[in-house]
Length: 92
Image (tube, rainbow, N blue to C red; front, side):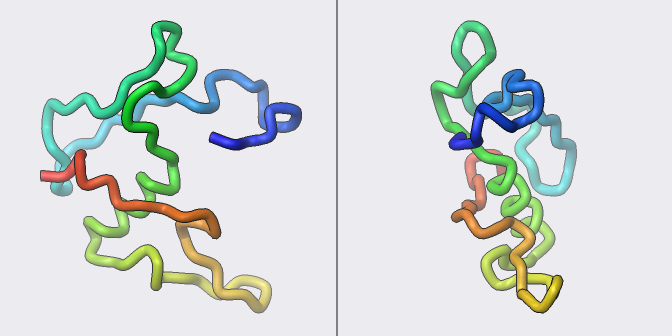
């Protein structure tokens, strides 16, 4: 998802991952998105970790675009500086 392949960890499947959610308003029994046949990269519904964070904050009743913390004199959003979205497709 745009990371620099020269310096990002072991460069091992950094674009595709699995997460499991239970309760909290998440749809049960749902498989969201799809990877290629090797499980290396997304081919349907690509979702970044910051989107998952935005979705968690949404479920807690917090607006991820307005919520920030003060660090080293700057107000920093918990979802980072890149755009994040709430993934409504995984919510009930």
